[in-house]
Image 1 (spheres, rainbow, N blue to C red):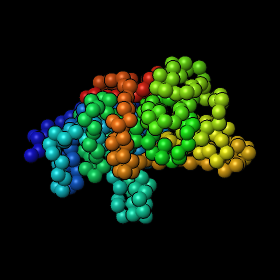
Image 2: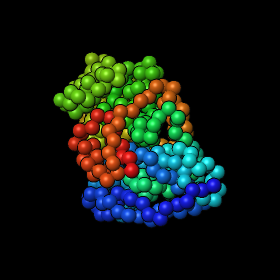
Image 3: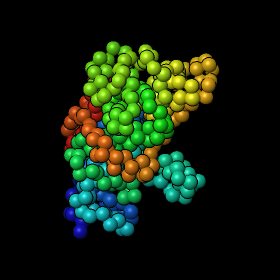
Image 4: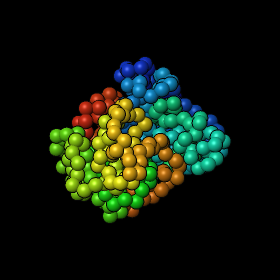
Length: 334
């Protein structure tokens, strides 16, 4: 049985390009077919949210509520949804696909021609309630409380997909040691691989954090480690890191760009790409990624380091993320 639905909710809304978020009262949405209404318990703050707020992504449908690392409890279900009231679910970035295009039919739903995205082209979790497609909701492992589960829904999932694209190499470099890298580093160590952490030059705190999570080497992104890497994963949205990472990987090494947005990649000599080195991007995630990672995370003993902010302080959390003054992940709790 569905719970009684309240009439209004608080939400942090982006109303114009480049503007800050504004606290508004919104009507609580009503779920339609295949949809579920969730009471938001926690929502992670992701770098992609910054790209939305800064207007760096195309065709943003203003006004929009950001947030795509959502943990919530089921309040009401639309037609065709059998989730039990009170079930704790997670909602990721990929929020809807058509199921009919070439990519959906060939196991690449993350590239769906008509895909919609939570907190970007669909209202997200910077609010007290969230309407989601039940097909794109995942059960949260019992061992995580709400704030510590939230970063798993994007930082964890996109890191996991990046790792799949990076291959089976032993030495893995992580450029940008924030929310995604601090989760992925734990998975890599559990798998018996070596983690090499690259931070902003001089960011000793982030380097110490990486070592505490088992990194065998940590230093500035302007340096090369003592050993050539098998693969490098870029979480920092800085195009200049692509040639830097190419110089750090061995012959046939892979450089994976994990962000949805990145500054322009500068010109670089062909010789650092030669010898079968590969540069590739990662786009979004699939439901398979979500199921696999949320089963793996508890087995790997993954923990998340979070800093909690009330919903009304979303702008403060975003500013902290922008300036690099977060160790781990920011999480909003309504």
